[in-house]
Image (cartoon, rainbow, N blue to C red):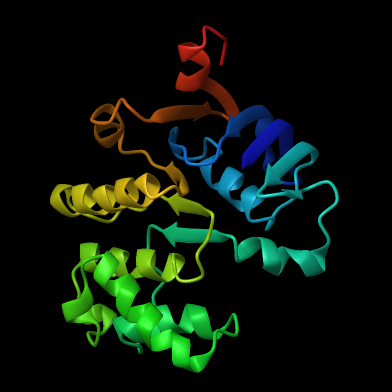
Length: 229
């Protein structure tokens, strides 16, 4: 589903962002991607979206390879990915239901199908009563739930989350993570970048991939199999 093979990523001004990163995330897994700020977490997520290409090595995601994917095929790849951001990235002049609908409109979903799909998604994230509220009328946790509903709009096979609880209080963060657990339990692969070590420690049942200065320094899956990270 997701595979990094000896991936290096260098930037002309700042130098290496990733060094020899290798890991394999299988279908239906949920994994935490941890590490201090600047460790390389966001670079990994950008490589998965093919917003960046590795300097060397290969990134594979849902049948696409960084080595041969064509620019015209990248939109097709991104429809298979749902992405959730720390800062929500909602359109402030649109209601919750309009924000979710927008994700369907831009991919050409039939107008008659949009309303029912939006209603189902907002119910899934527990926000059906707030469908007509604008982002500024919602709490941080509620805004993130709208963002999750939007990320799920086109039935992705992988959900990527970049510090999704970073702007939330502890109670809202727990609620958002419970949503990720429910989504994962339905069979979706989830990769969540986070610096919230309390959250990670509270869920030892999930895989942890830790980065430091662009290198994988710990992978609980490798440890479980008696391998070196």
